[in-house]
Length: 119
Image (cartoon, rainbow, N blue to C red; front, side, top):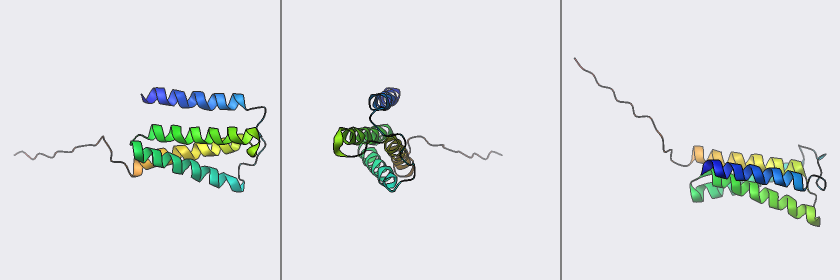
């Protein structure tokens, strides 16, 4: 299931990039004031979905989908479509989803150590 979800996320990202490449800016600054908002927005959405589903892959996919939808909305005339904005949102989604899973969700795998002293 994870491989299918990651493959779907990759297909969405690649199709997004190829579909709007000619209409989106690629010369946007990587350190603009809106990049923080994109990073935090992607992280918040991904974190919320990860907490709800207990699956970081779903959280990452949700953050990626919302970031793509926002840039497609901007491309239609509501703002400035930027590939850098999408990339920063995707980075925030990855950090939010997998950071939440690592820090907050209980771990399924563990190590049991048994010490036996025999004489």
